[in-house]
Structure formats: C-alpha cells, structure tokens
Length: 249
Image 1: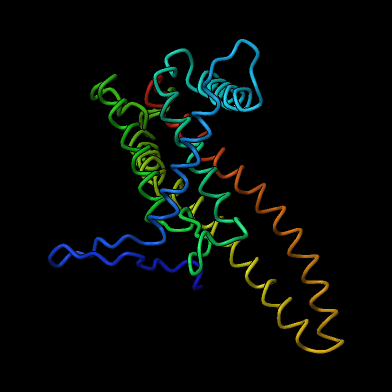
Image 2: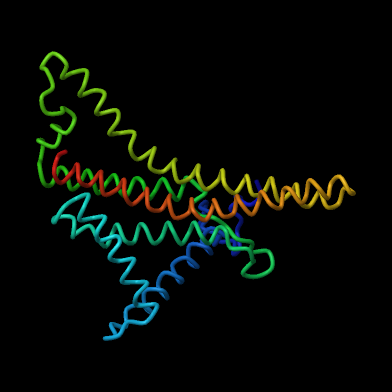
C-alpha cells in the first residue's frame, strides 16, 4: 500500500499544523500544469484548427452537449464547472498510470485514490446543488423529496426515504471514484509482484510471471478505460443532481 502513502517532499510546519508540500500536492500541481498547457495550446482560435485546437473544441463540445441534455438551456452557466471537474478528474486518473518517476523517489501518485480529494469534489458539487436549489426555489425545494402523485398517507415514508437518498449522494459520489482508483491500482500491484517473484523463481515461476504479464496488460487497458469512465460518471451525476436543483425533477 506504499503507493498510496502521502509523503512530505518539503517539510513545513506552521505552529502545531503540518503544511508540508507532499507528493500529493506535487501531482496536483502537475495535473494543473498539464491542463493549463493543454488549454493554452488549444485556444489559438485559428481559422483552420490544428490538432490541439480540435482536441480542446471536441472536449468542450462533449461537455457542452452533456450539460444541455441533462440540465437544459439553463445549464450553460454550469458548463465551466462541469468541464473543469471532468478534465481534472480525467487528468489526475491518467497521471496515476504514468509509468515513470518525475525524479528519483517521486513515483507516480494517484490523487483521486484518496477520499480526501474525491470527497472534497463531491461536497463541492453537492454544495452547489443545495445553493442553486434554495436560491431558485426557496423552501419549495423540499418538494423534491415528495414525488408528484404520492398518496398523502405515504408522504412521510416516501419523504424520509427520498431525503436519505438525497443526503447519501455526496458520499456515493466521492466513494465511487475513490474505490475504483484504489482497487485498480492494488490489482496492478498484485500482478506486478507476481511477475517479479515469478521470474525470480525458476522455470515454474517463469510461467506464472508470463501469465501475470499478460494479465497486467489487460488490467492496464481496463484501468485506462476506468479512468475515463469514472471522470465521465462523476461529471454526469453532477449534471443530473444540478438538474434536480434547477428543474425539481
């Protein structure tokens, strides 16, 4: 589990508080630098777009369509947040699969494998939903917990169930991404150890190592897919929750 350990790179303390610059901070900054570079190279607005401009426009159009379909015309105002959310999660997920160290001792680190990161993103999304819901509908926002056509005798039960379901959203949103990332990396670590130990264990071990090598290729391909899917699911669910806040569906 050492690959998930947050380790200080530049130890810093402010009184009793530890504010050290860690490997997690480093890889967050790397993700920010890559996203900034990608966007800057793709925002040249050339009459004949180049590859970078087409990539940025394609990604922007993809998120714009997601927002329009799930929230409607009023979702345009949430486009920057959803785009930032998707691009950050996708970049952070993919960096965790980066096969090389930036410098000796700084092995790749998946920031989204920590609930402290995914939980903050989930709470941020949920907070925006609450702010938008109450700002737009006031106390009528509570009608979200009573589906249209519910018999009066069932209102207390249904409202309670809907309220619990609503409050679970930020936890499920953060846990889903966190669990998917940590589980995939543990699986890769297990097969990686099989390869190393197998090729050091004689002819029989070579067979185990070879089979494990084939497995880890498949797992790596699956992880690349999971990285994209988890970013998409997080952004998609956020738009669906915002749709509830905007349209009370």
